[in-house]
Length: 307
Image 1 (cartoon, one colour):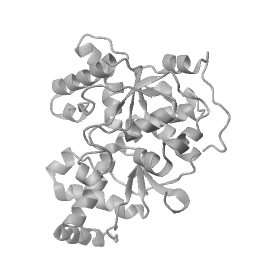
Image 2 (cartoon, helix red, strand yellow; image 1 turned 180 degrees about the vertical axis):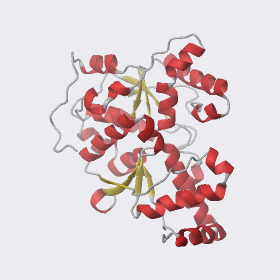
Image 3 (cartoon, one colour; image 1 turned 90 degrees about the horizontal axis):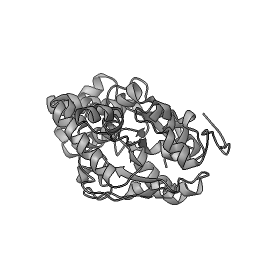
Image 4 (cartoon, helix red, strand yellow; image 1 turned 180 degrees about the horizontal axis):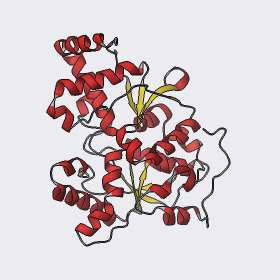
């Protein structure tokens, strides 16, 4: 952890705009773990690691460097896309003295300085490397035993592996250990690294929906009761677009999708209401009630403090 466990908090545009419950669950969990979060004042979009970078690489790099510079402390993000942007921007600046000088000149005009060293942290990587499965398990007050899930890693947390250097890029399993620590069972399934298709939506809607359908179909056929993930783009595609996918392919999937922080929150004693689970488009409440054996899900009053 950083000194005093303090991070600048960068949830990302998509979470703030469409998935506020994800931010809520993350704040609750990180607060329980004693992590202090403060806003990055004046932050912009990260920006997007796909479209924006391909349209204007220098502008993309400048915006990423500006966000890193104004943070002033290591940043923690909830978004795999933001994390990928910051890590890849840091790498590009370290690898190219010419780019570093050019971006540095732009920042100088804003009264900012280029940061040195890695300053971006993905919340899930933080949980694995700085907290760890064993310590996470110690804090569980409500085991998720009996829950069978599949983990969807997404594209941007482990790739490109030469930059991220976190887990096997073809078969990542580290974050699954965190889910096992909560008491749930993580099932294996084919084509784990298949993209959900969210990013394709902007250029080919039909292809995007087909990719989402293929991914959900494979996970459903594995016998999983739910999906666990750590990327807001994947959350939008697999949860919020699931009904659209069902309509497009005349099928019924009804596969609940959880952000990792939501499952941790449940295991830590938080209720569905406090985690905002009612904001999911695919209803997770019946599964939560069945799992916890409750007529009505309520908080377990064990937390030392709340935000």
